[in-house]
Length: 90
Length: 160
View 1: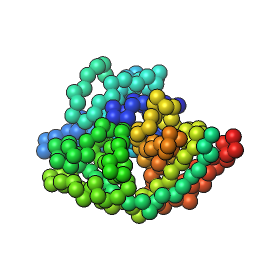
View 2: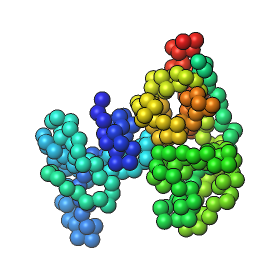
View 3: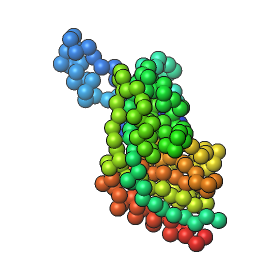
């Protein structure tokens, strides 16, 4: 069982949350090229290592948040609510 | 030892209030996220950071100042309400829910949103005469399924 630390609810079973995928900065819609939009919408890094990703606490506080997960070890760290400053390694 | 009982309390008036942190309603309702309190017979629950649930009557809600970014909605008939009571109620809940129902993790008054038998529910611990008791709220369309799932979990402990 993967325990995901929601910033509001604390550690919760991953089955109680919804995985929203890798986090990417959204391009500026006024200046982004078609290639940049394509990259933002469809391309994923899928690294073996630390990855910043988005989760939705669908059964709990109904908040979207970001967290860093090591895709090889499953370790989780630095859960962040929207508006919080990001930090740590990437 | 108090026997396990599962009661359907759905007709009890329930009101959901959503309010931004800087509103008068949020200040009046107060509480910290994940806690609840009895006020004039009503149970006031802060079920989410920006959402409160009032169970019992509409008197508490009628007195609220809902100016600004705040709203109320009567969920009496859209949300079912079960009460599971008994000394082994925590054991039953642990069979259908992944939360930790130990006293130090979920004391009387604690609340949380969680999956119960794969159904998104709100859970409030509201002990009755010092006997552990849990309120389980869910969309009414899951009534028969959820009741069956909880009763099935209870069978192991009935008469224990």
